[in-house]
Amino acid sequence: MNLLAFNTAGLETQIALIKGAEVFLKQSAFSRHSENLFPLLEDLMSVSNTSINEIDAFACVVGPGSFTGIRIGLSVVKGFAFALNKPVIEINSLELLGFNLVNLDSTKPICSVINAGAGLVYHQMFERKKVNGANVLKNISAPRVDKFKHFLGYLHSNYNDDVDIIYYNNNEKSDNFVDMLGESREYSVEALASIAKYKFEAQEFTDSKNVLPLYLRVSQAEAAIKNLEIRRASLDDIADIVLLESQNDEWDLNWTETGVRQSFDNPNYRCYLAYSGGEVKGMISVMLLAGEAEILRVVVLNSARLNGVGVQMIEYVKETMRESKEKAIFLEVNNQNYPALSLYQKCGFREVGRRPDYYGEHQDAVLMRCDL
Image (tube, rainbow, N blue to C red; front, side, top):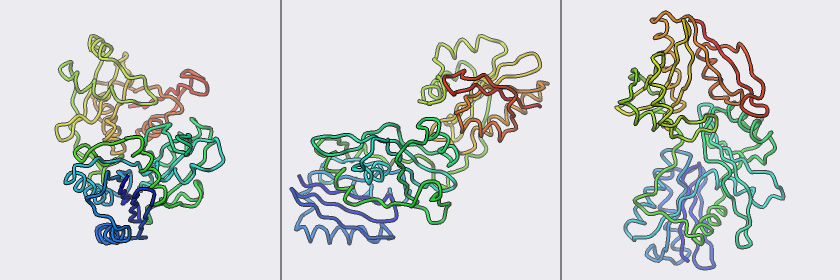
């Protein structure tokens, strides 16, 4: 096995070469990846007396992390893999960070956290498993991005804070959450080699055409989705509605296509879709109730979340309801759905009642109202 692995998702440029039973490692701290990657690679190949043509597979950290850094490492791997017709191994940076705790004597789940900037964090949960005598990480949850306070709520409500946390700041210009999450830890180039080797032996391959960066949030240049086109929907828009409803959302029971179609049979039902660049970004549905309205659904496309889509849709509905002489809008939300609660409070809703354990143990239905 000759395996070459790259990590350019963080502050350091890291390269690992596994050549048979030997492992060669190189890293450059606080570097410009574009300037240091190829000199490091040339040095590594020289020290190991290896030609790029001898490599059997290429591994790359695909994110989440630095937008520019990820593109640099991924472009190099895609180029080599395409030219040599070799497979590619994808490594998640949260998995790479969590691997620092893989041999810790603990049965708690591992929570990997990376500062995403702008008050956001990337996070993912893992468990330790033995595979062929070695400790590896297995996913408990998918990678996600949340505001820091929502992340803390997620951790408390789902794991009662009983986890092994590892934190990587990775953002010198943003808030540092060291007080809550402990001292920042670095990616390990040794872990890069270990994960690449395990995934090679497990045949977890993709190819140069299908390997993609793992972006959980848009770049700052794309951060705000402004000037959304919001319009009333009809059954002609069923494909876009089903697309939004087909997303996996831990807080919601997604509506089926049959349920959506039946809703349009009710003359008091209103559904509105938000578009940007011709693509659907979100949906909000309302039921009119004798001078008042109830919000039934607020759904934002996963890739468009944290960009103001929900706020714009709610404000649009509030104005529309004012025009139709409705006096107030009601809604109901799970008390553990911290992102939704924050959104509704931001839009002027206040709690007016609560149904204890409505969604399950310690999961109350919070009734909220916004006067128009």
